[in-house]
Length: 55
Image (cartoon, rainbow, N blue to C red; front, side):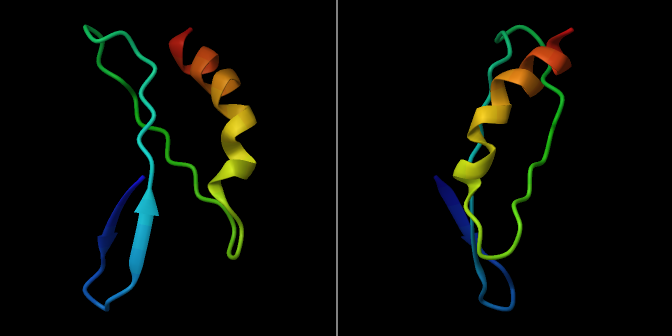
């Protein structure tokens, strides 16, 4: 997990999951969970999105 602090002192955490081949340019897909939720709710979707982006 990576994190940074915004100019108004809000701490944000994020993950970078890159499943592309190292020689390919990877498209960016930003997933944002709802307030008071956790990114783990999106984990099961990642393989499906990865396949969709790769095709």
